Amino acid sequence: MKGDWSGAEAILKKDKDLVKEEISSDGSMVLHVAVGIGHKDFVKNLFSYITDEDVLATRKSDGSTALHIAAIVGNTYAADLLLKKNKDCLQIKDKKGEEPLHKAYENMHLDTIGYLLKAVDEYGKIMSRSFSIGSSIHSHLRPGVEIGVDLLVNAISAKQYNLASDLIVKFPKFASKNEDVLMAIAKTFPSGDYGETYELPSLEPLWELCIVTAGSLMSLPFALLSVKTIEPITHIQKKKEEMDEAEKVLELVCNEIDKLEYAGTHHPYYTRPILEAACQNAHKVVDEILYRAPEAILSTDKSGYDIIQLAVLHRSERIYNLIYDIGERKNLYRTIVDSSKNNMLHLAGRLAPSHVLNQTTGAALQLQRELQWRQEVKKVVYPTYITQENIIKETPDMVFTREHENLLKEGEQWMKTTAESCSITAALITTIVFAAAITVPGGSNQETGIPVFTKDIAFIIFGVSDAISLFASSTALLVFLSILTARFSEKDFLVSLPRRLLIGICSLLLSAISMMVAFSSTLFLVFCHQKLWMFAPICGLSLIPISFFVALQLPLIVDLFRSTYLRKFGPRRRGKRARFDPDNIRLFFGK
Image (cartoon, rainbow, N blue to C red; front, side, top):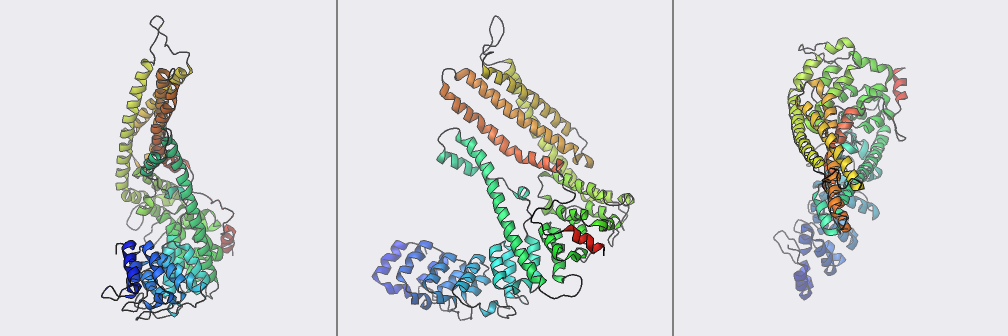
């Protein structure tokens, strides 16, 4: 149980047959327990005392082999060792008639399932009958759902796209048995918004890295910058690979659906998935479906909403931008209303789902995003519909105000808290650099009043950086004060307040960097003329707060700039790999 191989080996050397003895009431032997607990080294060493026949012969009272146990607990490492020892254990059934692959599926260990499926294929074995389409075995697990389809859906839901593609290649019918597989893709497809989904790494590993590997005080800032640079690149690369794998699975599934016969304008398996994809902002899924079935754009849900209306409700920008590619059909959305007489602007006035709001930093920027949606949809609807009432006598503006009342309060509080914190910092910097400008380093000549280090280049750097810091911190302080005295109306959150906050934080960042440069110049003037070795630690130490300040404030600056100035709506730019052609939609509506 403790994985003490030394003690176990001493016992087995005395009597090798003990490996076949039962050690628990359920008939478990040493191999079963070791595989179940998962001690890799213990299991590996234990195999030197087990023959090929023992792998099949060592069975529990319920008929389970060690491979059954490995499948139950998801011990892929042990499963690999067992199959290398004896391939026939793949087909051994327990007293319930279940093979190891069944056990792996019951406990949904996808890695182990994938390994066992590959093992079945490599060893030339046929697929277990229970995993064939139409089988009734294991009906007690998921009544009415084919086990193969269920396995594929779970693999996609867990984003194990390599396993999913292997399953589809080997068992193509799994992909087109029903719409569940394509629905799973629509729900979990990667968004492709690498920057928005990136979470900044913890700084704790950075400290450990510096302590272990640093040879000088310069290591900390450079390590910080390397972590902040390399880790996002690695993150984006992983997201890119995940996207490629997901696109491969999507194409394989759609290929199988296209082989099916159907009556109507498009296959019904495309209807619900394209609507779900519109809700999830899965534009790749929508593009793929429209590439194969342009008529699917007419699909509607139970409430009568099509993909454009759902895109507005769920704030799916990439799906909404299809409105610029559908030609004359765009005019439909100028006057379209639902059963409650809500037009498109009423839908834009509803509060976005929480998971969509949480993609944006801070309540103020969340409200800004909502206001941007309202402004965009206003451009689409007829002017008279901007003030049109719905069935409960509410105009779009009334709906927006009611739905966003709490978000407006939270945005005001967030903006004030941020401005107050930053204004305190700006005031401190202003005080420090102003005092430094009066009491210059080295003092002044008593007769002329001219600073002693006037001709030194370091003194010039000090003067320039101190002045920049003073002007920047004063600007930041005034900007933050203007935020604190603002009205905080809805329209202020669209551009005015975010722009002020962006200017204030950038000014504060510039002032902090300039202050550290001025301080470093002062230290250089005072100490480094006779002790040049102090230049390196001064530079290294000054880079520490600069690096941390930039690393901590840069994400907010990027979010503010991207949210305020970058375009979100308009005709979509299509890459070389784009499948969907807008001309197909225009031709369809032109028939």
